[in-house]
Structure formats: C-alpha cells, structure tokens
Length: 278
Figure 1 (cartoon, one colour):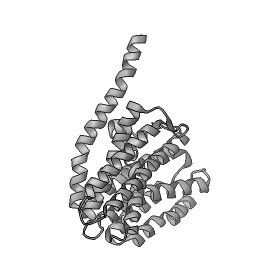
Figure 2 (cartoon, rainbow, N blue to C red):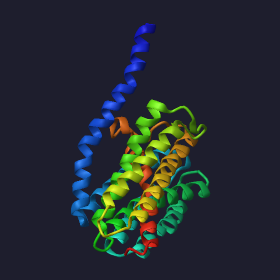
Figure 3 (tube, helix red, strand yellow):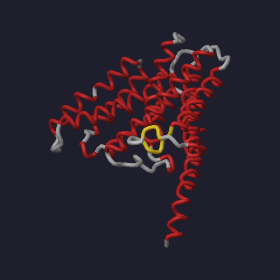
Figure 4 (tube, rainbow, N blue to C red):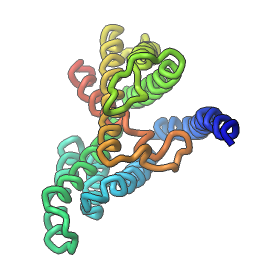
C-alpha cells in the first residue's frame, strides 16, 4: 500500500504539468486570435472569462453571502463601459455594484451581516470586472493597441511560466510562506527576467515605446502580475481553498488563470499613459 501511495504522489505533479501544458497549448492560439480581432470578439471572450471567474469567486466567498446578481451586473457593466465608452464609463459601471448590492441586501433573507455581503460583492465586481475591462482599454489604445495587448498577455504568461518552472527546479527561499508557500524568490527572479525580456522583444523598434520604456513596462508587469497572484492566494487561504475550480485542469479555475492579469492589465494601462505614448 505504501509504495502505491508514494508512486501516486510522484505522478500527481507530472499529470498536473501535462494538464497545464495541454490547456495552454489549446487556449493560447484562441486568446491571441481574439485579441488580434479585438472589438466585440474580445469583449465576448472577456465577458465569458469574467462570468466564470465571478461564479468561482461567489463560491469561494459563499460564507460571506455575496449578492451575486449585483456583482454580475457591475462586472458586466464595467466591460460594456470600457467597450462603448472610456475609463469613466467603465468605472461608473463598476460602481453601480454598490447601490445594486444595497438594494438586494435590503430584500435578501440571508442573515449574513450587510458589511460582509456588500463588501464581498463589490470586491468581486471591481477586482474581476474592472481588472478585465482594462484589457479592453489597452486593446483600444490608439494605433498600437493590438501590440500593447499582445505584449501584456505574452509578458504575463511568460513570467508565470518561467516562475513556475524556475521555482520547481531551483526554488529554495519562500517568497510568502503564510500566503502562498509554493512561491519562491528564485521563481520570482526567473519570472521577472522572462517578463522584461518578452516586453523588450515585443516592443523592440515598433515605434511605440522606447527601449527604456519597454523595460520599465516589463518591470511593472513583473511586479504587478505576482501581486495579483498573491492577492488571490491570500483570499483562498482565508477561505481555506486550494483552487477556485478545476475548469482548466492543472491551471485550476478561471480565476486561478487570470489572477495575475487582473493586476497587470491596470498597471500596464496606466504605465503606458504615464509614458505619454497615447
């Protein structure tokens, strides 16, 4: 019995790795193709991702009795605002979550405290809805929006991939022992190098950002993406959950897959604005 259990334990990381690679190989061309098309195609993809991620978040925070209809409405209105208007309409759509949650709490039979229910609802709508909406704003940047969106996605994915493998191969020093014990400083440095390199290569001689600016953008993404990952890890640890779902196999749920992007997309958008390139 003991040898069988040991063999099963050794095979688990391998099967998880294979699952991650298969999902990435299938999803990457689809996502990049939709980003290339932009417009309502990208809106539809992000709306689908937001809906799935919000569903996972409501399950994660179910002990707080989140008011899901208000959160769905606020998250989707943020996406609609970004698609049809600009950042002002996007923020306005997301902020509607608060009065909607207040009204729903008033007629809800749930006994959970209003502070907890409304706070969880607003957190989900703003964290997920606004985070993904910023990808629409990045894609809609004048002239070079497609390039900017590709750069953000590829740099974040490269950083996540190299951090994962670097941490597994050489990880010794834990980065956040209480929040995410599996993350190491070695993995972070591998991920940072990959993120900056991809941003530099993607933007090299593209008449969009200068070389120093592309390196700064890569550095910003290299910090923002792991923070997004750690933020979700903190919430999962608080709720005593390992993954938010199994939708994407070894990647976990949709929220596990996009957590880094939810911080990286806003950071990239404001970083590019700060450069005055739009």
